[in-house]
Picture 1: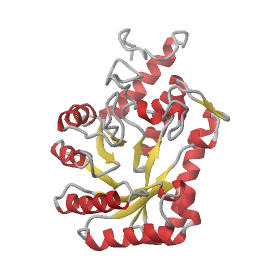
Picture 2: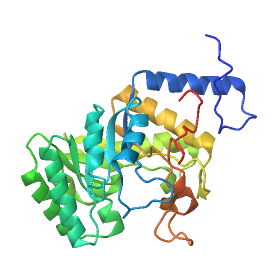
Picture 3: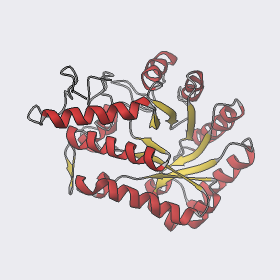
Length: 305
């Protein structure tokens, strides 16, 4: 099959060999032909951040971009307009992993939990996530989280599985949380452990298998994995368009080949994730560059999308 001159990766370095670009295009086409499993939904537009109210129009616009490419969408909260995400996703025929964001605000925690349960009874939740990296951040004690999980499990429809999202090693270190889950939702980030790019996929696969070992016969979903396209390095892990694109392709190809449920992080770049001017409360410069699409809605890696 001959290559097409109009298909180039506009964020890849122009010095890359043409054959390499054509190969990447073909790999992308194969992924898109049968859709990919799942994507984390980046809701905030430029200038927005958590605490701002999301509009139905902005969610609809972004969902329309993602729906032809994926079978599942993951949302992170059920307040401030985020409760609209699973409802709109269902309108596009997408499956949903819906999270209640838990933190130190007791009133918000209560609203998050109640809205998650309500959405489930509406038929808008296929998997329910009670909390995201709460143990990692130290926002709740283990007993407080377990109490929320037990409450949600008792209130959900029986057919909706419930889990908790955190780094793979938290499920090794916290057997009570692992036992409380119907499904383990594990975040696997070689970048944030300083892994050099050539070894990143193998490292991510090992993270997943470590979660599998403690899960027993329970379902394990990779709730997040990804690689930033810019923003600097973290020890041996270097951010670049080339590294991000190759990680995306390799991760999603492995997911499809092995039948692993994986939610890629993330859909769109979000500037708010850098934190304040000193990088406090965020991830620094790298935080703004995890999307497959940039913050203007352009797919980063090929003109084919």
